[in-house]
Length: 211
Ligand code: SF4
Image 1: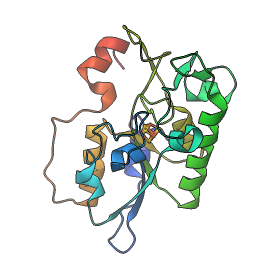
Image 2: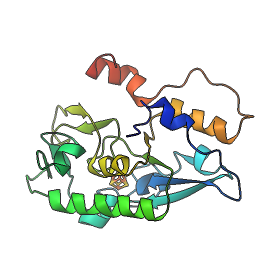
Image 3: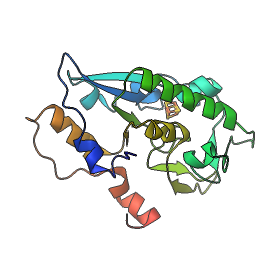
Image 4: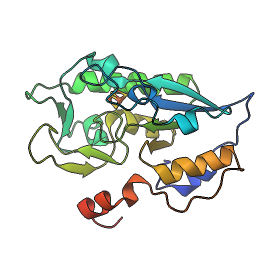
């Protein structure tokens, strides 16, 4: 099972695409600038992947699993008792800030995203981390709308299904891996040694310990 950015092999085995046959990249709808977050905005995320999505040998395919599953605007879904894999195995649930159970809707949206990705022959996904659906390195450990929000290493429900389908997933915060892919797409880009993936940031290491 490929698990970027911890799986260097999955990264280096990505096809080197052409303008005529671009790399097919699934992107979280909010990162596309779509107004699909819980409050009906893009939460300021639109355009944050412009450097890679504007490359001529990249084709972006947007999707928001929670918009499909719960609609927009919506209450805030977060995983209680595990990560996306635990939700799919029935060992964790997705509740909103009122304690209402949205597990079924979130799984429905996640399955729709994975099916859409497979039908579009997606080769890589770049998703918004910490989401109950799109998280790839971190998810909230319970409701995020509390004074001292807690976090858990793990993936969201949609990410789990994408990985199960053999699609590598990156967080939009995995700057090192994203730039590495950009250099494969355009070898003329300069080397950058200063970039870090989400799991290599000071916050991540201080919160979870060394990876
Ligand atoms: S479910 Fe994913 S695409 Fe939709 S708003 Fe949340 S992070 Fe963005």
